[in-house]
Amino acid sequence: MRFVMLLRPHANARYEEAVLPLAEKELLLTIGQIMPGSGDHTVRHIDIMGTRAIEFVLSEMPEALTKAISGHSALLLFCEYRDDGSLVPLAGPAVPELGDDLSAILKYKGKTNERFTRFLIHMALLSAHVHSPEGKRLVFADPMCGKGTAVFEAVNMGMDAYGADTDGKAVAEANAFYRKYLEYHRIKHANKEMSMTIPGGKSAPVRSVSASGKGEVRFAVCDAGDAAYVFGKGRVHIMAADLPYGVQHAPNERGHVTSMSAMLEKLMSGVYASLAVGGAAAFSFNVNTLPREKVASAAMHAGLRPASGPCYEGLEHWVEQAVRRDVCVAVKD
Image (cartoon, rainbow, N blue to C red; front, top):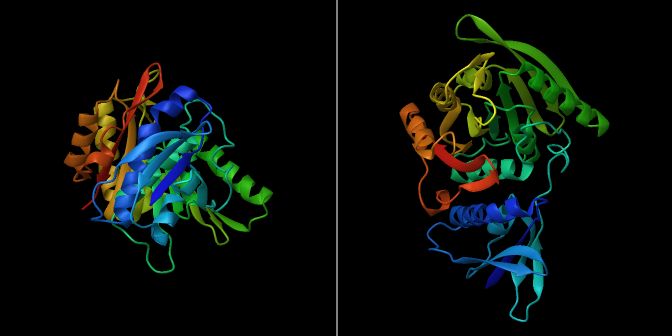
């Protein structure tokens, strides 16, 4: 049976071309998770009426795989591709828990593309070996959340979503925006402010918003190394972080410039402490300022296992003149 996945177009044609291999890797990883042992799968990029698409062949299409493909970060429409050239729709993009616009409304300098953010979270989710307890949600966390793009993507995917950042202003803006979003859409919710103790006798302010039937979103002001004290040690199932690109500014912690190496060491220690056994984290970074080997080495040094194999290779892609971005996924065994 032939199948085709039409890809959502991107406004930047050059970027769309650059991330095409990422869509392929995400698809192959999805197939491998749902149909382990089904062998290698050949995919090819095709064009259907001006829309980019990925074509592949499988002997069957389990319902679980159709559902999983609906969560693909770049999916526009998933179809069976008949011999007469007709397309039989099987699935569209998964319905977001709250709304498509949740992570797109806030605009700010340095914001990571929402679709790529979804890809990053999905790669970690597909690489993890965890299951949510009965009646409970998976827990996602971004220890460098900025104004919350990854947090909002994760809650739309049905997870409890936590974010932490040293930029208190950004964190406050993300929290205020989420509350207003729920109010605008008339979704009942409860707000809570608290303070969590972190090493050094300090405390991290935390704002929590629990929406009726939509899980919890939590924002905290602390650095990535202390995130486990806010998220809960060993409590997080999925993590993702877009690391500083180091183009205009060096990494910054509490107003103090630090090195990429010091930033990585603190980040990975916090990620390891936060993750549950079997949990996975995905990191994106600029290879012009932070080589992939350095990220993988820092993850290993913290006790994480960098994921390997064809689906985790060839993820480097162009973003802009000074940025070539790559992705590293690591698992806590």
